[in-house]
Image (cartoon, rainbow, N blue to C red; front, side, top):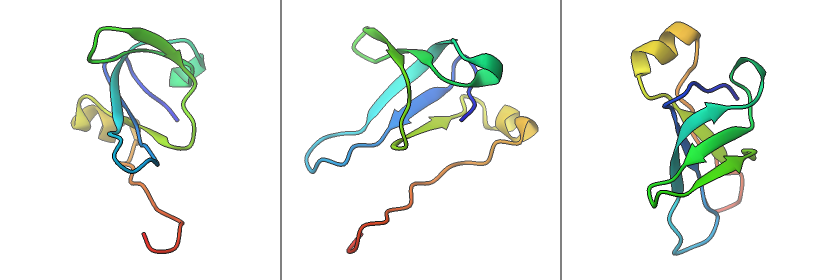
Length: 82
């Protein structure tokens, strides 16, 4: 996982009735865009996030993402019935 400042961190939820979480990456603490990320959420709080497998980085500018070689990610459900 690689990110740039200003990219959006999208954390998917596995709970029915719960919304996904979104936050804007404001600081990168890993090397070369790697986690952990300092993320600002819409309610104004900030948190140091070590993204798990349920999180994806959505580039803030898709043209820059193509230049970095980042492909849009998609979630693949592995549970039966999804």
